[in-house]
Image (spheres, each protein chain N blue to C red):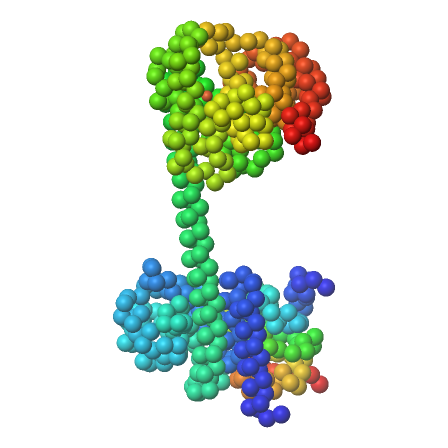
Length: 109
Length: 420
Ligand SMILES: [Fe+2]
């Protein structure tokens, strides 16, 4: 699946919630696409941004930086951020680094 | 696993990746952007930026920025005091509360949002400031620990190293660019000087006006036709332009004599190759021995030329080319005592003298060049400009040249004898 189709894989939900899939390229420079995608949704007036981690095994430093960028954009727009389907290791990482202070983290159940 | 161990793995992962990023040959801008991500992500720092310092312009220019806001300046002017402070501080983070001593910081005090900026890291590499890293608050909201600062220094060293390396490359590129321009200038000057010289030589000889320039051009065409490279072809042209430079010392009345000159005058005139050689000795053309071309442009393959009566392989190749170009021009232009000869007669003569006076493959090269132009294959009109339209339109010229080319042996009879 190419990048274009992956990033545009955004499900529109009621109440101005947008879901963006993090996937694995979150951990590379190409992950900046996710940030752009999120900013686009925020500009469209989305008030809750859901980043789905169901297809993300691991989050590295680049990934963390990009997610902090998403959090910053959302906070500037007055929107909430939810990280959903996050695996156990990543939940730990987010807590340790303080990322969880800025977004609601839902672990994989 | 303990939280600390996890943290270590995460940070050292970033450090390792940064080391890899700055050593691989990817795009510099991408390297810096990736490096900033790695630095911010390793300690979960909310925002930051990397600036490169140009010590010539005393300017800090932002290369990558994240979350610092639209008002954050993209460029800062630094003064000597800033630079001094950075060097004294070295590669270690400066708390924003203590950055007030930096003059540039005072200037921008209003634009820096203290809530968004917490540390400044001067990228001092080998006693030189190559940039500055700006860092905002951590996601935890906690202050930076000594451990954090050590990590920031280690990563800053990598980023600074990448910038220093880039600076060195740019400097090298700038210098080689300068050298190239200098060389091109020199080359133009050289070629202009050579042409001016050729014009001066031709001035002396009013009946053979433009002779040197034409010999230069024929030599150039022959060189190209022999498959020589650009520089060698240029060398052939120079040799042609300057071959008669020795005539500058021959008395004007001998050169311009409207009659066949006597033996004494002839001896005087025949000194011009040797005199030319002396004049041209200081010219060091990298691809062609210009002085030797002048010295031996009147030698013949059969040893009946002058000044030294050299045989075939003793004659420098460039001199053989100039010899043919010189003779060809003499035959195809009006002389004080002789009208120019008809084209078919000239080409018959050249073919007949192949292996005696001229090297056959050089004659063939001249014929090929001419034939290509006649057939419109070369897309140029060089011969037409040099010989005139009428001359080029001599009936049956192309078939004749073709026949001659087919009939010409690639090696001269003299060469074959000397091989036995
Ligand atoms: Fe001559």
